[in-house]
Length: 113
Length: 113
Image 1: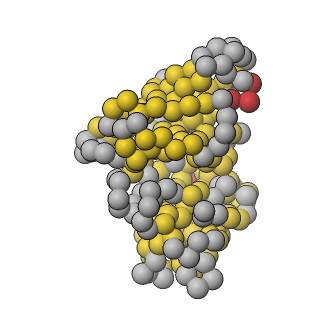
Image 2: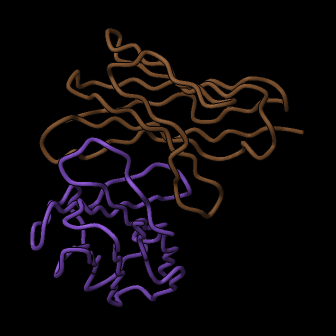
């Protein structure tokens, strides 16, 4: 069966520090991968999606970036965090080429102080 | 691109009452409509979905209806229980392309015992 791992679960970072959140998927090949941000417990804002290794599409201009160095690994990064980057970050995957549900990771609660 | 509107943003009901959450979408090419439930601090998880070749689908106390002509779909929860309290998201996906799901802004359902 397929599983998705996302870490860390909780993160407190000072303004201006870098960020790296990692997500890995097991049990499937060549998935679609997504990063969402959820502010104030509501609304799923799509940040990035990837349909293959090295293929990243950005939905919202910001100081965040994403990379997909391996087929089942998706990384969300920032060189310098802003206070406004605080939120609940969710990684998700879906089967590529098929119209089915998305499966979410456990999420990372990021607080920028 | 697709745009999904979801109403209401907050819904408060008494235990045993019914709850209805409505969503509209803009792109007639959308043909897959999942609903997710997100409990506090947890990841969204699929509770029911419907495809465009079906008008209604039921699973115990929850049901979803779809009106493709009007481009709207609804979630119905009957005999609500306190454990139904959560944020519910509707989504729409377009067949073809990257199959990126577009989510509504969410409905916070509160069931009072």
